[in-house]
Image (tube, rainbow, N blue to C red):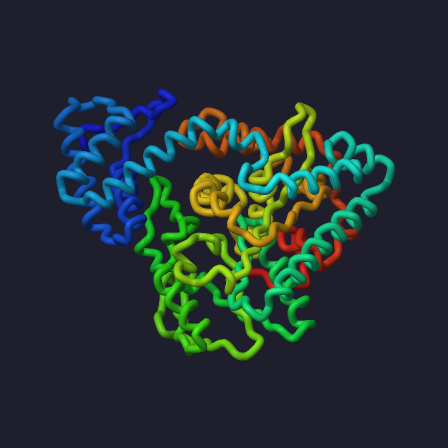
Length: 447
């Protein structure tokens, strides 16, 4: 056992020291600049630990800032300037995000055009679902079915309008990118847009970017053994870009295959080539990330962004956060389709949110269309399904300094969900609803 047993977090909390955290921080920075040698990261981490042990006596407690300073020093002294720069930039970015987190998450995203926000808010006011109180009053009047019907029609109208925009440019478009943060409704929306295009003689052919994941062994872990699949660097972006250019040029490509059971990728697995009136479909979290489509003319692409832009205030006058809606959606979907414990989804969400803020949200203003995938009635369903779980997690993580993010989210959702009249009846929700993607019962294939 080493001399350093504890470290002090920025909050002042004292937690167990783990050299693996240093290794993963270094490896994560290396991955950001194209490096994937874990052995080098481990060797550098050992140098950092040696520096710490040389400075502190047995039982000494260094703070996080000191450790990060030493990481930068070791990287630079060992000639890893690019990795050091990536590490420094990430560290500075995290500092900035901590300072702005409360302000950023308490207001609608500045990247969403205000006309779209205004339209969504205006619709909510007109339909008396702009506050939890007004929503509950409509439920008390027996208007649940009416709310479902109006919500579904509003969503379908947006899908149809988007399909028309694509068709207007169909002679030039070679790639349709459907993107948005986790659990924004990409699967259902993609299927519906594809149906509209097929009626006009066009076919969306999916380039499944999940098959472009690097091997699991090449991903960094955190101190809890959790892999970060949410970063675009988890994908072989260079190969995706190369294959897209080849397909647009009419050439045949050999796609890789990723086996999620073994966490390994096989190259040159299956062939793909575009036919007449076929358009490449990319359904991906990171469809807007520039490295994926670098060098492809913008007129050959149509970019659609999805987000549940719910415009509903709680009893404090605060808007319900879109990220909280998606967190619950992902919990339900992962539990139903991937046998994944909802609590693990909560604990993993900090990765999801960090990657969204860094790699997805900044590019929203490059899109050609935005669809609001929120269903104003969905939070009442979640109150029935999830309220007790969030109350439990709030208590469980209340005094755990390593799970502060999980505690904050659980506490906030426990308070918000408790304000809704819970609804257990899902029968009014059509099988074609985007919400069925998460609560089950969809007629569309899930992935």
